[in-house]
Image (cartoon, rainbow, N blue to C red; front, side, top):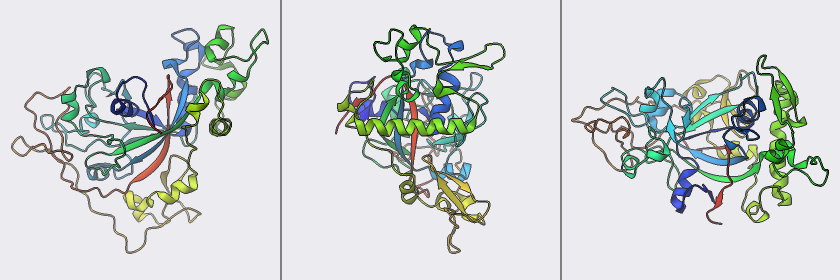
Length: 397
């Protein structure tokens, strides 16, 4: 098992990798690198990618939404929430209703929907149009405070998104869990570590070395925004077919690394702890039927189907392979939306209720108590990715 290198204890290292953060589909991870991380025109630090991007990390994620989430959003995912530094981002300096709903706030009249996993399609960025590009949000305890301000008291008084290690989510005590399958250097994926240096004595060890010698990974014109030049990997950046091929290259480089146990920046013993990505067909088989988790799929004439590593359910416009129609005997459960409890009704109980997040509580705000005692959602499995600046620690096995 892999964990964050920023923390000391195994518990903190495990929590640190998915502690109120955004991730993406495999396609979405490359979209983020391409759109935000590599353009030399906008580098704030010379020869350094944005946020020191260095690796693509692959996650195997399981999640079960709260009943209140299913009732509110009528989909397998809630709204995508932007998260930075370990907190749910404010909107114009104010906590958004969606962020507040992760734990509820009766003073402000916001019901307790719970720590829902959010998702949103991001296919239309002109800088990097990737098909099947999804971004996700994973809120954990104390989601209105940054990592540096998350106290033990705040964590204890708010609902768990991330489950304890080796615990499956039930939509009540917690809503998601993960394991890291492995990670791959961006420099290997884009081919920088296969390029010879100017002296032709060796290949480049890193993007920094390549850039220091005058190499350009990707560049646009600051005034016109037009593409100027790049290394071959990033050719035709606005072509969706080319971007799909880039995603396929990412997956191949990762699998080749596992087979050869060699990488320019990761040792063979660390690679030995990594796992292959599961087959998409196996994910479809293991996941619940779309109609079991999504109301619109339960009534869709031609059913719904799952696909790719993201395992997003889509409504079928016509009968086709993979489309599954709900049996006539199936009835989607009737779910009740979360309501705001008054101070006389609010109470906290371990695992199934919550208090207002410490960053907005006035000290007297009661803990809105969820009405659900079991989740109507079936456990769903997805493979996602995250861009990291540091390698990961091997916690065990």
